[in-house]
Length: 295
Image 1 (cartoon, rainbow, N blue to C red):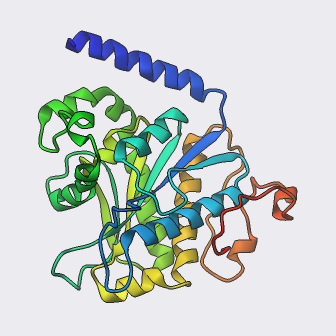
Image 2 (image 1 turned 45 degrees about the vertical axis):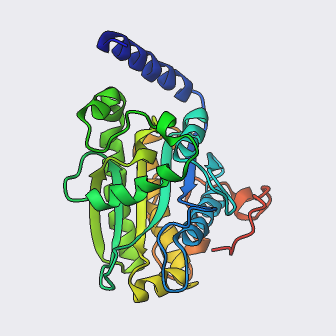
Image 3 (image 1 turned 135 degrees about the horizontal axis):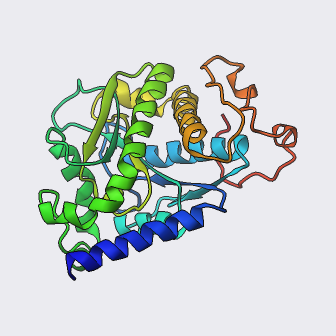
């Protein structure tokens, strides 16, 4: 296909997405990384696939209860294997406004690595190992040679294919990533590992602002213990939620009431965002049947 035809197709796609976005509820797609036969990074007593599901469901549940004006969609709610292309397809099919993929970091042979990191699509030169690890799930997929034909983390041609869509979303993705670093680290006390860019397949395949979260290092015993503790869940969820609401306040035109970030004290959960109607605070709105610990 000629470059001119590719340009026209991408332009039409962006135009269509813009029209669809004009009259739809803000849609958030939450992706729990790994799952099923893809266990992700192993810890001393836990697995990445279980932690990602735990935090993805907890955050999604919190958004659903506090923001009835947001449509939350999950790529998985159970321990199942999903191809990267399927995760992206779910986001694209539902015309998502934002895609968030939850992951847990690891460094082979190191027990001292710490911190919360977030990644957006790009070509970060210092994060090759993260890209290789997160993209390695491709090789567990049945027809990966066909589905990902031409996908190369070091290929200039791969970048050119999605150049226009990426440029449209990159700025918002990076801004959201930086918000996550600020709020999550403030509430969890985790070391700020920084906002990074890399050629991650699950982000490359989506057509909306997107971010991959690395909550901490399962390869470090103390950080693994922290992420498995009950106390850590509300800290992470509130921090991620604060970043999400600040992002919406700037880019979701349906929000007209300013949002004040919640802190991490015991009364914070009761102080829901002002955009939440009283009926929802009183629990009269139907809740999702996801069985997770309420925050």
